[in-house]
Image 1 (cartoon, protein in one colour):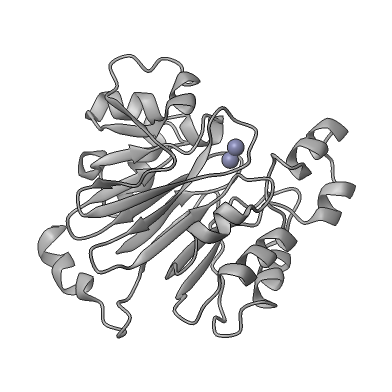
Image 2 (cartoon, rainbow, N blue to C red):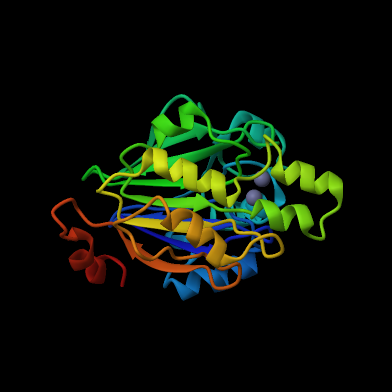
Length: 270
Ligand SMILES: [Zn+2]
Ligand SMILES: [Zn+2]
């Protein structure tokens, strides 16, 4: 299993997850033209995408969903509540998902995770491939619940929101109402919350912890890295997903350290 990102932050989010048989996009907060260009950096085109999963209806996650999926005939999966809030979705093939039930897209098992965020019916996702490699994506939640902790156990890679540094948010340029929203129970995870979450799900099999949905105004990558590094001893680098450049493909290895994916890649993705 591999993952990559087209970009992350308040101006747009989109993550790619793939096996040698299946390519899934999580959220599409970019215009169709932008997506086509960003996918090309990862040697993909929209025609390669088997499904788009949507976490919630905020613009930085759904901006391009309907237009992209209509143009390229890509099926969309989201909660009923999320889809109720999406405009101009006629002609898009949508499947509602039950947040308490996992489902399959190709050879990927998808486990939705309900999260506390100020949207209609938001969720995040854990993916598992047929070799039981697990990838957790967690952004856009205001606090950590016990349900989240149990869902994200045993992940081999984590894309984790480190949205803001509490001090920087407090002293930063946002109006008070926005500060309250971002830092509230249904806003976004700060560096310290992300570190505490990581501490509760970390294990020796964790291969990557990637910092995502970082605020350009209320955080610094070094602060986010510091808060994660203090609870992780066996991982020394914490990639930060950039708003413009995204993140290149990362492999999740099998527990024995091998990567069965790499050998097939040249034949499958020509
Ligand atoms: Zn949101
Ligand atoms: Zn967001």
